[in-house]
Amino acid sequence: MLNLHFTLRDLDQFARKAAGFDVRLRATLMTAMRRAAATVEARAKALVSGPVLRVRTGYLRRSITHRVDPLDHGARGVISAGARYARIHELGGRIHVPEIMPRRAKALHFYVGGGGRGLFHGYGVVEVFAKRTRAHDVQMPARPFMSRALEETRPQIEAEIRQAVREAAAGRSLG
Image (cartoon, rainbow, N blue to C red; front, side, top):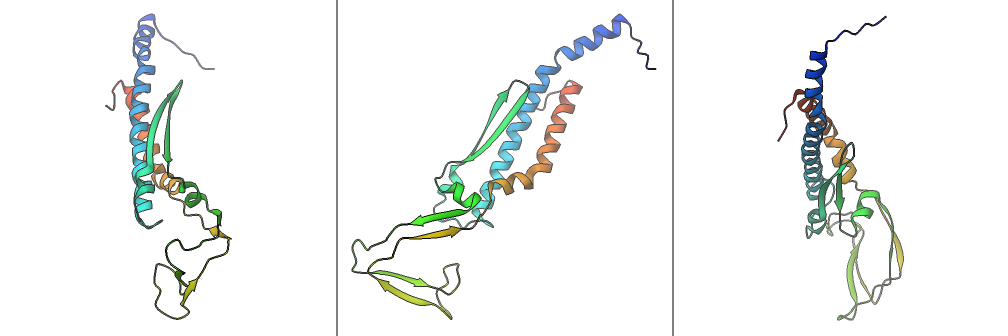
C-alpha cells in the first residue's frame, strides 16, 4: 500500500512551482528545437558539399533551410530542400532524358565509358560525335543527405531536448 502525506502548505508550494512549468517547458523546447533544426540543416549542407554530392553551383546547398513550428504540446522542426532535384538525390529513382540535339553546332560531343569523376583519359574511353541522342531513362542512385544528417545528429538532438526538459523542471530557461 502506498500512502501519500502532504500538508496544504506543501501543496501550495508545489502548485506555485508547477504553475510556470508549462510556460518554461514550451520556451525551452522551442529553443532546443531551434538549435536541433539548425544542427541538422548545417550537417545536411556539409554532406551536400562533400561526401555525398559534388558541389557545382551550390544551389542545392543554399536551398536547404529549417523552421520550427510551435504545437499545442511541443514543437516541430522542419528541414527542407527547395531545389527541384533534391528529392531525386535523396531517394534515387528513374529520370527520363529526352532526345538531345545540338543548338548551335553541327554535332554533340561527349565521352562514353572510362569510369566517372570526369576522368576521360584511360582504357575504355570513347569520344563520340553525334547528331542527336535518343530519349532514354537513367537510374539515379539514392544519395541521402537529409536523412543521413538527421541520423548523424540524433544523439545530440535527443540530449538537447532532455536537457531542455530538465531545465524547465528546475525552473531555469535555456535562453
